[in-house]
Image 1 (spheres, helix red, strand yellow):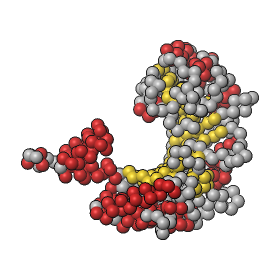
Image 2 (tube, one colour; image 1 turned 135 degrees about the vertical axis):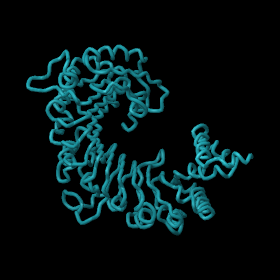
Image 3 (tube, rainbow, N blue to C red; image 1 turned 90 degrees about the horizontal axis):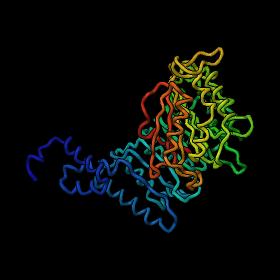
Image 4 (cartoon, helix red, strand yellow; image 1 turned 120 degrees about the vertical axis):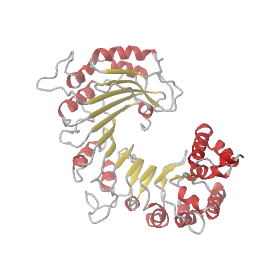
Amino acid sequence: MSTAFLNLPSELYDEIADICYNVGGHNLLRKCALVHPVFLPRVYSYFFNHISFYSSTALAKDVRESRIASFIDILHNRPFVAQLVKCFTLYLHMDNDWLVDEKDSNFPELIRVLKEFGAQPISLTIHKLPGSDFIYLPHPDKFNALVIQPLFAQSVKTLTIGNCDLIHPSTLSAFNCLEDVTFDKVGIWDILPSPGPPQKSLKLPRIRALKINAFLTNDDGSKPLVKFWRALPFDFSALQRLQLPLEAGSDAADMYPLLRTPRDVLRSSSLREVRLLIKPFLEGNETTLDDLDFSRTAGIDEIRLTINLRDRIVAKIDLEPFIQALHALISTKLNPSLKVLIIDFAFGTSFQCQDAISRPYWSLFEQEIGPLKSHHPPSPGRHRRVNLDARFNFAVGIASAHGLRHGSLPNDWISDAASTLEYLFPNWFIHMYEVEDNQPFRNCIRLSVHSTWPKPLVGDELSLLDLR
């Protein structure tokens, strides 16, 4: 290899390794590492930035333990690798005592070695293995002492937990630097006294973002929203982004008042973004929006409501009561300082979406929001919200909630639906998206209507990945 190549700035070697990873992934990176040792530092950073460990059945126990032992050997031979580990993922089965079993498992030793050589992971993810039932973490005393406290408590800022039957509040409160938390179908131990937050004497993680995709369903069909919320051992005084699921029925109606008292989350001076994942109750006049009121939340800049209708596989859905409630929310229950309002409608089929768009009730929103020059006068006694950036997104599921394709129409229907929306929203911006059925997401936005934002959606904004 020429001397000129070896005298290049180190940034160029990193750039070459980055290109290899973007083009060919880890396979091409391996070949890049064999060309010359100058590429090794960047290659190592790709290979060890995110490490994953899998639980297993008894038959695969030896394989799991040998892999952990191999990684321990790598750390002893190249101690600097420990400092490259930033993201840590555990894919677990039902029985996970191996995480704390010092006699029969290498995992506690791995935690000690990583700590000894200076590992400071900033992200921890715990998920169940595909095909497993809900997972159970080990006893909190052992799990906190042998896993969380030694390695994760002082450095992890992002925590994601999915499909976990029970997690102890003491495990959550052990993360001293936690900022961003995501739960997906998680249950929490109900150990707190009467209703109320944990005692103020405890030093709790001061989180900035809380995202809850779904709650566990009890055997009786109810969802323990209230218990879960009360037991969260977090300090919400710095909370900036909040996402919660609200479903009609069970104890969902009690959830919104809990946001106001005793922690008064919606009045927090730091809160800027609120997103609610809503499965509306469409029969009769009751809707999930009746209890919502953002009129006194002066600090919130963005509110996003995602209306999930994917599991309604009937051809037509009567949305009128829900739209009326949504109109009442926008016209009387939003703070004047609100800057962005996003409403997502996720339908199971394009038939449903086309039928819903063709209804005349959408013109209600054009009366309240948008430019002063409009075909529709504002409601009596109301002033048009000229500066509110409002967006209505209409998403159609490529696959149904049950994994079956049904009722998919060609993209031609989008043009007809857009023409209807142009009539109902004459001063808004209409964007059409033709999305191929082979895209790697189940729900995609096909139509978007913007009151003041003339730019189309890009990237991940076109997909609704977190709908269940």
